[in-house]
View (cartoon, rainbow, N blue to C red):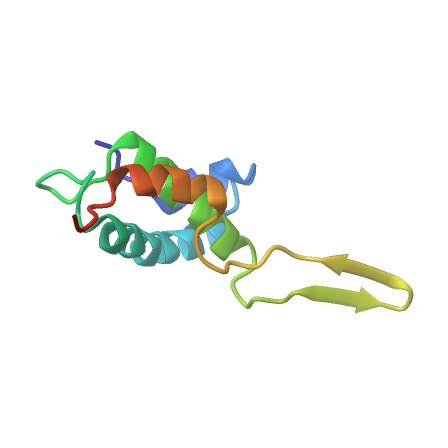
Length: 107
């Protein structure tokens, strides 16, 4: 099983040497891990509450979006220049594909 850290997320974003980002991502990893655990109802986690590698990938990916734009800014405009930022609005389609493989569903 794989422990996800803030450093893993910072490295995923190509900013492994950014201590502030790694620290922020470390706090966000805890939240996203709980979201994943709740979504799968604990399936895919071992007895030490560590996710398997597939769920760890989802945690890293979702945490990266949250940590890259923690204040949820959608657009930034300066004069005629405008940029649109990624906002964390839950799990992506690709993440849902992985999560749904572990989700327990009522029959």
